[in-house]
Length: 421
Image 1 (cartoon, one colour):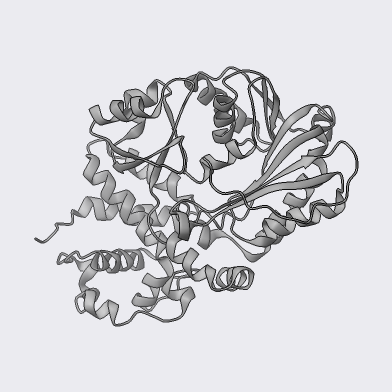
Image 2: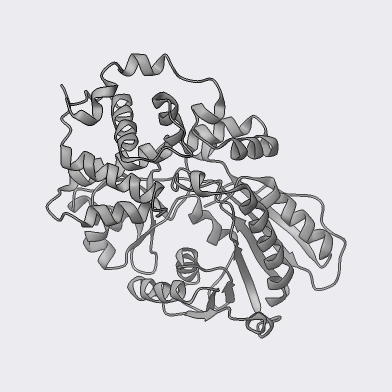
């Protein structure tokens, strides 16, 4: 059966690509803007626009290879139409007889498969510098990781245990024709198997869940918090992990969410209200004094630091094309600075987790190793790596460190903690 392509939807995809690659907007924001431009589009129309936009962004370089164009330069409107056409052919569509697609009349799926390149950076659609950097860092494992991250991301929900449980949430979503399945390895998570508009559901409005990758959901439990503790989330952002920590603390104790961006903490405040969280206090890091005032006061500290994001390319495929080599060096400097200044907030015997959404050792194990060398009063208790290729989740790294009461020799033995969540 031939699947029909509606011209207004194809035009919307091209408009989205123009916003991403010509105007420099983030893919998710560009897609949201286009979807809001026509309230008459139904769920299937919206799905076509979003899925095809992400598919072209994901395979941007490979599609240019098939088109014979330069992925760094050729962003003219007629080229965007060609890329859309090639992408649709790869998905099994028969192209309509439109002027924009006439130059593609000779192409079919067999012809494209016969032109698949062997060079990994083209075949897996990734910039040369990023491919070389990652391969140098983790070797052949990189081939597996980038292949996994070129699959569309699954949608996972974190059950808000302050308000409901997993079975109740699943039953509520099923009433609205949203199918789910449980994950045995991540007890707080459910996977969406049949998509609908999650944010229009009664469960979302009641604050029963947050959308959060199952890999990301393993970070807050790794910190080993308990009700009544004073916990600091020092790079809180909009607070996904902060809210998870609050649920693990059962709303008891003090949870301080810090960030350099006040607008993110304002967003966290709104999310906390919907989640029924009331033990969170937001603090903007305006200067070094904010950190200094907290010296020796935290039982637990989460450092979910800025990173390259090379573990979440599946979810943010446009970052491949917008990131520059110098950014990696810059972000590693920020990580080292945070590790140098923020751990002073811990009490003796307090624990902290250093976490990234990267799979590069230079952002992960090597940063921790350097920190331990410079801070002999800390030791490494456990670490965990989440591989997109092996887990099906986004890629994360986390290390749990303990501040010893007395200065001790660095703990060089690295324990590997299996997934207990």
